[in-house]
Image 1 (cartoon, rainbow over the protein chains, first blue to last red):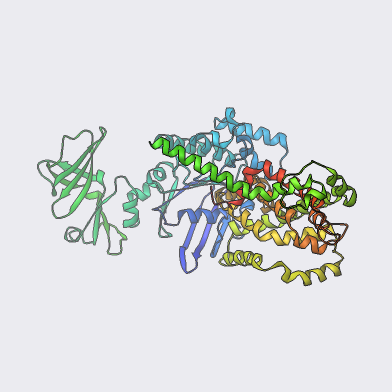
Image 2: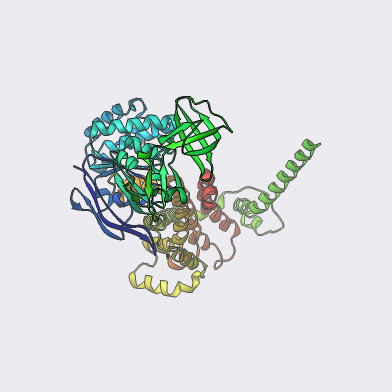
Length: 335
Length: 275
């Protein structure tokens, strides 16, 4: 079991509230991702759950039990750090076995469990090495091994992939997802990368300036963002926003159209513009179009579009996919 | 041309370095040479080298005041005070490095400021306290007083070493179920071994050479080598050869220790400033 509940959690440093008032309910076995721009408080929120930071007010419940004041060691949570935080003076086997040693298990049990975890993570031949003799990906695996070996109530990941190169990151992303399928243990994962959030999460928490902007499945966030911030943060490339007179036509303060919800034509359409930069990826073509009177818009066209710098194009937004926002940025349903 | 200039520079630097080193080493060299002179040769100041080598002074010194007992006291007091100092300073430096409050910096400056006070200023109160507690001429008493004297430096040194250890690793230990004690024993101390070793060595040397408290608080039982040297100066007249032999015997062990552990000491003396 590993449910996590936050009830009106506040964290302030002096007069500055990093987390003003956060309430969340993470179900047992769920993979929840905290995502948001840097400095939005996502790591702080994770550290509050871990017990590495003290809450200023509010409650943190693990499996329904109030753990707000409990020491990290007592919470039965495992954490994987961005810096891996391996013990440099211990071998891989000692690193993985450390939590078991702290739990007072005997040597034979520790040894067996370490071997089991090492075989799951392909680390068996590295057990006698020290962390400095491992590559970045291997170090990350050791950190994960150290977390899984003690069968915690939940795993906490603090931007675990940001020190890895792009190719390795994709691999590790898959491995962590597979691990979640196997273990079915609650995982809370912090990242600033919305692609990681979308691909891995059962549910995503979007944070902005310490506030929970929205908590939902990836597709809920994509299809029905609660506000302009979420709409702009989720989706790649970013949603295009239009304010002023054009938005007034829809009876709102601003509207948004995702790059993939445009029809592109060289002859006719709603908005006329000129191609600034065309990025040809083969599977897709990204067009950065200067739309007359509305500014720069990003458009995603499927396949290989023969459009280049300076070409005049017409963009037509899919009317059912136009997002509407009021003057405070909140989403407004279409009439 | 450039090569010639750099060679010239190297030669100059080497000569200057040797001259400086010899000037610093001169008193020690003189002491060692004098210790092998007869008392007659020793008092002739103009005569740097002796006419004959003699080890008589060494035998006399040992038979008169038992070098080995004083040596044992020096070892007990310097090592004991260092171990005591580490027991107190490791937790103190941990809290200052990893759980600082807004007043930590002030406390550290205050600790250091106690080193600026002349020791003689507290001699009378400490003497009276020791007398009352029966700690005069007692190895434990000296260990405690030397530990207190060196504690500010030890805490500061350990603090600078601990600051170099990433806090993530200690947090990982906490997440892994380590209590505070286990975090110190299994993670912090093993990672800080080089720093702790330098601190330990430097503190042993400071305690070994300490003369003010050891002379004032001991008489016979707990007297270390500093008292052993001092017993050869003054009242019975000047016996320079024996005094030199006593000094040589007192500095030899610490000189050897310093020589063996040069690398750690340099690191210790730079106070963790060079990473």
